[in-house]
Length: 235
Image (cartoon, rainbow, N blue to C red; front, side):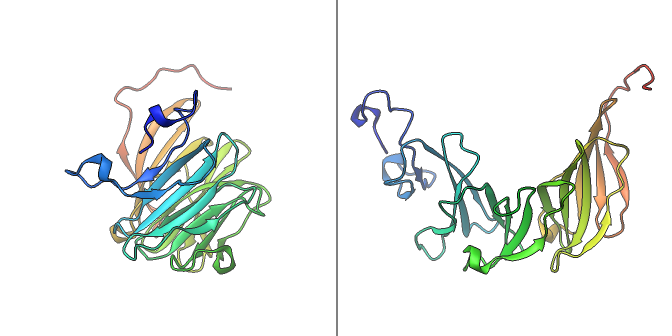
Protein backbone atom coordinates (compact mmCIF):
# COMPACT_ATOMS: atom_id res chain seq x y z
CA UNK A 1 0.00 0.00 0.00
CA UNK A 2 2.86 2.35 0.73
CA UNK A 3 4.89 2.82 -2.44
CA UNK A 4 8.58 3.23 -1.43
CA UNK A 5 8.75 6.16 -3.82
CA UNK A 6 6.48 8.12 -1.47
CA UNK A 7 8.36 7.29 1.73
CA UNK A 8 11.05 9.43 3.38
CA UNK A 9 14.66 8.51 2.54
CA UNK A 10 15.96 5.31 4.18
CA UNK A 11 12.49 4.31 5.46
CA UNK A 12 11.46 1.79 2.81
CA UNK A 13 11.80 -1.04 5.37
CA UNK A 14 9.38 0.66 7.76
CA UNK A 15 5.68 1.62 7.69
CA UNK A 16 4.34 -1.94 7.59
CA UNK A 17 0.61 -2.61 7.29
CA UNK A 18 -1.74 -5.58 7.55
CA UNK A 19 -4.15 -5.91 4.63
CA UNK A 20 -6.69 -8.51 3.54
CA UNK A 21 -6.08 -10.07 0.13
CA UNK A 22 -8.68 -12.17 -1.65
CA UNK A 23 -7.22 -14.58 -4.18
CA UNK A 24 -7.85 -13.54 -7.75
CA UNK A 25 -8.28 -9.84 -7.01
CA UNK A 26 -5.71 -7.06 -7.61
CA UNK A 27 -3.56 -6.29 -4.57
CA UNK A 28 -4.25 -2.59 -5.06
CA UNK A 29 -7.82 -3.26 -3.88
CA UNK A 30 -6.79 -4.95 -0.62
CA UNK A 31 -8.55 -3.31 2.35
CA UNK A 32 -6.41 -2.11 5.23
CA UNK A 33 -6.90 -4.12 8.44
CA UNK A 34 -4.29 -2.70 10.79
CA UNK A 35 -1.26 -0.43 11.06
CA UNK A 36 -2.46 3.01 10.04
CA UNK A 37 -1.00 5.74 12.23
CA UNK A 38 1.15 3.39 14.30
CA UNK A 39 4.88 3.60 15.00
CA UNK A 40 6.82 3.20 11.76
CA UNK A 41 9.20 0.59 13.26
CA UNK A 42 6.47 -1.85 14.26
CA UNK A 43 6.21 -5.25 12.65
CA UNK A 44 3.18 -7.47 12.84
CA UNK A 45 2.34 -11.09 13.36
CA UNK A 46 -1.02 -12.60 12.48
CA UNK A 47 -2.88 -15.85 13.11
CA UNK A 48 -6.45 -16.86 12.43
CA UNK A 49 -8.86 -19.29 14.07
CA UNK A 50 -9.74 -22.53 12.29
CA UNK A 51 -13.21 -21.25 11.41
CA UNK A 52 -11.75 -18.09 9.86
CA UNK A 53 -13.64 -15.77 12.17
CA UNK A 54 -11.05 -14.53 14.66
CA UNK A 55 -7.86 -12.75 13.62
CA UNK A 56 -5.09 -12.25 16.19
CA UNK A 57 -2.78 -9.30 15.54
CA UNK A 58 0.50 -8.86 17.41
CA UNK A 59 2.43 -5.60 17.13
CA UNK A 60 6.10 -5.44 18.14
CA UNK A 61 8.15 -2.28 18.13
CA UNK A 62 11.61 -3.19 16.88
CA UNK A 63 13.13 -5.94 18.99
CA UNK A 64 11.52 -4.99 22.31
CA UNK A 65 10.53 -8.07 24.39
CA UNK A 66 6.94 -6.82 24.62
CA UNK A 67 3.99 -6.47 22.29
CA UNK A 68 0.54 -5.04 21.79
CA UNK A 69 -2.12 -7.64 21.00
CA UNK A 70 -5.48 -7.27 19.26
CA UNK A 71 -8.42 -9.45 18.27
CA UNK A 72 -10.52 -8.86 15.16
CA UNK A 73 -13.97 -10.37 14.62
CA UNK A 74 -13.93 -10.79 10.85
CA UNK A 75 -17.56 -11.92 10.74
CA UNK A 76 -18.77 -8.75 12.45
CA UNK A 77 -16.36 -6.49 10.59
CA UNK A 78 -15.67 -4.48 13.74
CA UNK A 79 -12.36 -2.68 14.50
CA UNK A 80 -9.57 -4.52 16.36
CA UNK A 81 -10.15 -4.91 20.10
CA UNK A 82 -7.11 -4.64 22.38
CA UNK A 83 -6.21 -7.74 24.38
CA UNK A 84 -3.09 -5.96 25.61
CA UNK A 85 -1.89 -2.46 24.83
CA UNK A 86 0.94 -0.29 26.19
CA UNK A 87 1.99 -2.97 28.68
CA UNK A 88 5.60 -4.00 29.31
CA UNK A 89 4.93 -7.70 28.75
CA UNK A 90 4.95 -10.41 26.08
CA UNK A 91 1.51 -11.87 25.48
CA UNK A 92 0.26 -14.32 22.86
CA UNK A 93 -3.26 -15.55 22.15
CA UNK A 94 -5.22 -18.04 20.07
CA UNK A 95 -8.93 -18.66 19.65
CA UNK A 96 -9.41 -22.41 19.77
CA UNK A 97 -12.11 -24.67 18.35
CA UNK A 98 -13.83 -24.71 21.73
CA UNK A 99 -14.67 -21.02 21.28
CA UNK A 100 -12.37 -19.72 24.01
CA UNK A 101 -9.45 -17.33 23.67
CA UNK A 102 -6.32 -18.74 25.32
CA UNK A 103 -3.85 -16.08 26.48
CA UNK A 104 -0.25 -16.87 27.46
CA UNK A 105 1.38 -13.91 29.20
CA UNK A 106 4.18 -12.79 31.47
CA UNK A 107 2.24 -9.69 32.51
CA UNK A 108 2.47 -9.91 36.29
CA UNK A 109 3.81 -13.45 35.92
CA UNK A 110 7.54 -13.35 35.02
CA UNK A 111 7.58 -17.13 34.51
CA UNK A 112 4.35 -17.17 32.51
CA UNK A 113 0.71 -18.05 33.13
CA UNK A 114 -2.20 -19.13 30.94
CA UNK A 115 -5.57 -17.39 30.94
CA UNK A 116 -8.82 -17.87 29.02
CA UNK A 117 -11.41 -15.33 27.92
CA UNK A 118 -14.50 -14.97 25.78
CA UNK A 119 -13.34 -13.68 22.34
CA UNK A 120 -16.20 -11.18 22.47
CA UNK A 121 -14.65 -9.72 25.65
CA UNK A 122 -10.88 -10.30 25.43
CA UNK A 123 -9.85 -7.37 27.64
CA UNK A 124 -7.76 -8.20 30.71
CA UNK A 125 -10.63 -7.44 33.08
CA UNK A 126 -12.40 -10.49 31.64
CA UNK A 127 -9.46 -12.92 31.76
CA UNK A 128 -9.79 -16.04 33.92
CA UNK A 129 -6.69 -17.80 35.19
CA UNK A 130 -6.42 -21.35 33.85
CA UNK A 131 -2.83 -22.46 34.61
CA UNK A 132 -1.02 -20.37 37.22
CA UNK A 133 2.63 -19.37 37.32
CA UNK A 134 5.09 -21.73 38.99
CA UNK A 135 8.06 -20.61 41.08
CA UNK A 136 10.33 -23.38 39.78
CA UNK A 137 9.73 -23.39 35.99
CA UNK A 138 8.92 -21.17 33.01
CA UNK A 139 5.73 -21.75 31.02
CA UNK A 140 6.73 -21.32 27.39
CA UNK A 141 3.94 -23.05 25.49
CA UNK A 142 0.81 -25.17 25.56
CA UNK A 143 -1.26 -27.51 23.41
CA UNK A 144 -5.05 -27.77 23.49
CA UNK A 145 -6.85 -31.11 23.05
CA UNK A 146 -10.49 -32.12 23.30
CA UNK A 147 -10.46 -32.48 27.08
CA UNK A 148 -7.05 -31.28 28.23
CA UNK A 149 -4.33 -28.67 27.96
CA UNK A 150 -0.66 -29.71 27.90
CA UNK A 151 1.54 -27.10 29.57
CA UNK A 152 5.14 -26.97 28.33
CA UNK A 153 7.61 -25.90 31.03
CA UNK A 154 11.33 -25.28 31.13
CA UNK A 155 12.78 -26.39 34.46
CA UNK A 156 16.52 -26.35 35.15
CA UNK A 157 17.21 -26.36 31.41
CA UNK A 158 15.07 -29.38 30.56
CA UNK A 159 11.47 -29.85 29.48
CA UNK A 160 8.58 -30.83 31.69
CA UNK A 161 5.07 -31.41 30.33
CA UNK A 162 2.01 -31.37 32.58
CA UNK A 163 -1.55 -32.23 31.60
CA UNK A 164 -4.49 -30.17 32.89
CA UNK A 165 -8.25 -30.26 32.59
CA UNK A 166 -9.17 -27.98 29.70
CA UNK A 167 -12.17 -26.45 31.45
CA UNK A 168 -10.85 -25.86 34.96
CA UNK A 169 -7.06 -25.99 34.53
CA UNK A 170 -6.78 -28.59 37.29
CA UNK A 171 -3.54 -30.59 37.24
CA UNK A 172 -4.06 -34.17 36.04
CA UNK A 173 -0.60 -35.70 35.57
CA UNK A 174 2.97 -35.16 34.34
CA UNK A 175 3.96 -36.64 30.99
CA UNK A 176 6.51 -39.44 31.29
CA UNK A 177 9.40 -38.61 28.96
CA UNK A 178 12.20 -40.93 27.74
CA UNK A 179 14.81 -38.92 29.63
CA UNK A 180 15.97 -35.46 30.67
CA UNK A 181 15.87 -33.50 27.44
CA UNK A 182 13.82 -31.19 25.24
CA UNK A 183 10.22 -32.10 24.45
CA UNK A 184 7.43 -30.39 22.55
CA UNK A 185 3.85 -31.20 21.71
CA UNK A 186 2.34 -29.97 18.49
CA UNK A 187 -0.78 -27.85 18.51
CA UNK A 188 -3.90 -29.91 18.05
CA UNK A 189 -7.51 -29.07 17.23
CA UNK A 190 -9.86 -30.18 20.03
CA UNK A 191 -12.12 -31.81 17.44
CA UNK A 192 -9.27 -34.25 16.75
CA UNK A 193 -9.46 -35.77 20.23
CA UNK A 194 -6.89 -36.10 23.00
CA UNK A 195 -3.96 -37.55 21.06
CA UNK A 196 -1.10 -35.25 20.06
CA UNK A 197 2.32 -35.61 18.48
CA UNK A 198 5.19 -35.34 20.97
CA UNK A 199 8.81 -34.85 19.96
CA UNK A 200 11.76 -35.61 22.22
CA UNK A 201 15.54 -35.18 21.99
CA UNK A 202 18.52 -34.93 24.33
CA UNK A 203 22.31 -34.79 24.15
CA UNK A 204 22.59 -38.38 22.90
CA UNK A 205 19.14 -38.99 21.40
CA UNK A 206 18.19 -37.72 17.93
CA UNK A 207 14.72 -36.22 17.69
CA UNK A 208 12.09 -38.95 17.99
CA UNK A 209 8.33 -38.41 17.58
CA UNK A 210 5.56 -40.19 19.46
CA UNK A 211 1.79 -40.26 19.63
CA UNK A 212 0.70 -39.28 23.13
CA UNK A 213 -2.79 -39.66 24.58
CA UNK A 214 -3.33 -37.05 27.27
CA UNK A 215 -6.17 -38.96 28.91
CA UNK A 216 -4.67 -42.47 29.12
CA UNK A 217 -1.01 -41.39 29.30
CA UNK A 218 -0.15 -43.89 26.55
CA UNK A 219 2.91 -43.04 24.41
CA UNK A 220 3.56 -44.93 21.15
CA UNK A 221 6.34 -44.46 18.62
CA UNK A 222 5.41 -42.51 15.50
CA UNK A 223 8.76 -41.90 13.82
CA UNK A 224 12.35 -42.61 14.86
CA UNK A 225 15.60 -41.56 13.14
CA UNK A 226 16.42 -43.73 10.13
CA UNK A 227 19.89 -44.53 11.44
CA UNK A 228 21.01 -45.26 14.97
CA UNK A 229 24.01 -43.28 16.14
CA UNK A 230 26.96 -45.12 17.65
CA UNK A 231 27.90 -42.79 20.46
CA UNK A 232 30.47 -43.33 23.21
CA UNK A 233 29.01 -43.99 26.67
CA UNK A 234 28.10 -40.94 28.74
CA UNK A 235 29.29 -40.78 32.33
